[in-house]
Amino acid sequence: MADRRSKFDVSLVTPDGAAYDGEAELMIVPGAAGEIGVLARHAPLVATLKAGSTRIHLSENEVLEFATGPGFFKVELDRALALVDDAIDVKEIDDDRARAQLEAAKAELEKVEAGESQSDRWQLEQRIRHAENQLSVSGRTTG
Image (cartoon, rainbow, N blue to C red; front, side):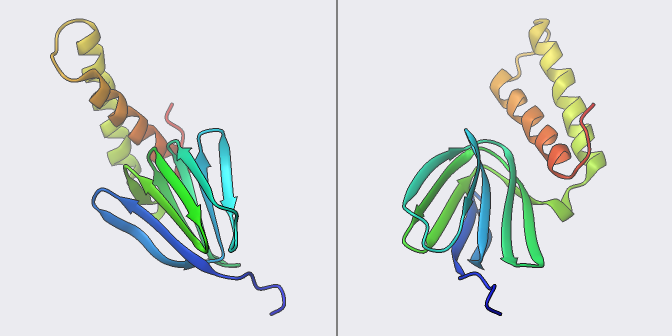
């Protein structure tokens, strides 16, 4: 019992709403320069996030993991807020679907590069990164 960490408020928010909103003992996010781990009473912080794995430690034995897209992270007082473009619970990642999305986006990007398609290059690149991130976070490779 003496080993218990203090809890603090944590929110993981996407444009579609909160992927998680509650208390946690530790939150680890994929900062642009490396992982950032935050405990209760952390100093104020603002950082940019890259696509990667966001882990929310509810207790010593219970960890939620999400494949998250790029975004921003803010810590103040006893609250951490990660605003990301997407967050998928690692348990809900469908490998086959992610691989299919990856292959379709890569094929369309090849058409754009060959001048055979008017699709938006940036959107296709984001779809590729999103699918690769899901496969990476779920522990599967993209190759």
